[in-house]
Image (tube, rainbow, N blue to C red; front, side):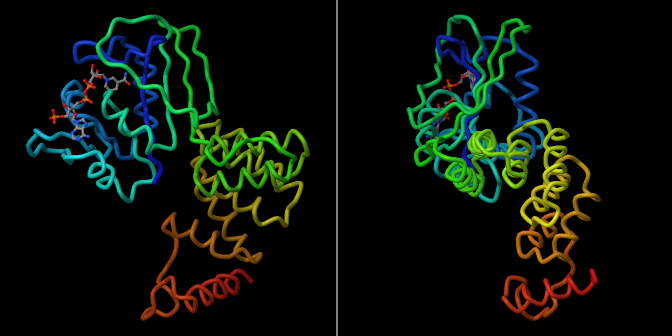
Length: 306
Ligand SMILES: NC(=O)c1ccc[n+]([C@@H]2O[C@H](COP(=O)([O-])OP(=O)(O)OC[C@H]3O[C@@H](n4cnc5c(N)ncnc54)[C@H](OP(=O)(O)O)[C@@H]3O)[C@@H](O)[C@H]2O)c1
């Protein structure tokens, strides 16, 4: 599970005043909603009280030593207990306030930070992230009142983008494994700039799709990569995943099934399983993950495709 912090602070690091947000920025609230929807959100008791109700469509976890049982909310007595309550979610969003951010910073891998330009009076601040966080994404919204900048930072302890195309590619793959999609995007983007390759282009497209990039553009990039290298299974896997993310589930499943017929293994089957398309395992008395079931499953899938 990725532990992320999501926050909005002013140029002078203020995040709140008198129990409220110091600003009203509907576009930022909408982004907060889009990013957190379907995930677990964790917040301090005062932040929960200032919102006034559980956030719909999300698993709400509130840390408090005093709060009693509350409908629609998991109350945790410590931050660790709160994090454990999010177990099984792909991403946990820590939503503040100040003490919660401070305690969570050493534990989190990603920070979504809106900087609200201007100096605000306030009584709570956003703590300075350690320098192991690197900015991987930046968008300026200069038309809004107030103007804002949206940043995404990720912990880069072991990753220092740089090196030749192959090194960058390997870093990108490692970042993908750790689900550090912005970092992966950064590494594949740099690798691609040094040496154009269809496989790297498809990895770039997948990390773009997973890091909130334009899905149709990511799909186009992966489609072109597959046209350039049609037998490449990694490219096919990336394209199938992107098609599903882009809402083209039928097409995505077809791309993945063809991959299985072409010799693609567990990664393709796991992706199909995630979409709920797998039937019962060949040997029902053995677990699905048993090597015999895996092997027979792949074999039968291929035979069906002949
Ligand atoms: N701009 C932003 O991104 C943002 C985000 C969130 C909040 N805010 C603003 O920040 C303000 C609220 O933040 P705040 O810092 O004052 O309060 P808060 O962090 O929301 O809540 C503090 C309370 O949370 C509980 N708590 C904190 N750490 C805990 C831990 N480790 N274990 C158990 N309980 C813990 C305690 O509750 P008990 O006293 O019940 O034990 C503590 O009194 C508001 O103005 C809000 O609008 C801004």
